[in-house]
Image 1: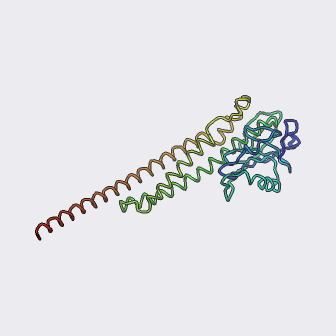
Image 2 (image 1 turned 120 degrees about the vertical axis):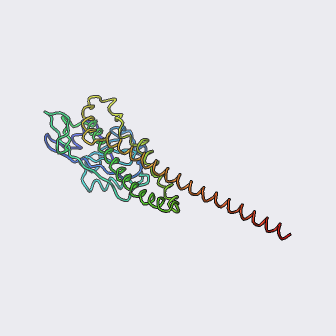
Length: 275
């Protein structure tokens, strides 16, 4: 990947007025080691943005997402091959999302009813901001599916515990579910920060309106709050089920102790009578 400057951006993305390009977001891995990709000739590092050798522009995020602007399929395949050594825990299948961009010099930065994002000027900062939003949207979608699956897994475990009063093998599964939920929470808060304003806005406050429109369009804050509530419900449910299982185990242990005491008393009485 070779970087571009602001004047060279038009040659990397030859986008005439009212013409459009496709921005494609791909979730490749748990994490991308973007620090190893930072070079002196890169365009920017917050987030990292560079030109693709075969044509187009790429934006990379450490939480495992790349956003491609105007990159053909063959160029995308070549780029992903070059990125492979920098992927940490890569996914077998790639979640993806696409959005169309158009430049309208006489208009304003806005989102059309059909979801097309319109720029009044094609700038690196606008590409970075859009990439940030659609990358967060993709990660949120991924975790929404992950949490829905967690709900499906917990329900039959709760039924088993309700019917039998014992967790059985489900106890270990519940503990693994707690680990999965904690890991999702860590990734959402520590890495993605879907509800936080991008650092880019500190240096470019003129993009605040575009950011607000994009956040509203993708409902990032509302979806993050819903996801947080679901994570909280799952955590409380799992903890309750584990506590019930531990309580059941404690009761069984107490009965074992009582039986042993009774047996010991019977043996002592028998021994005394024999003597």
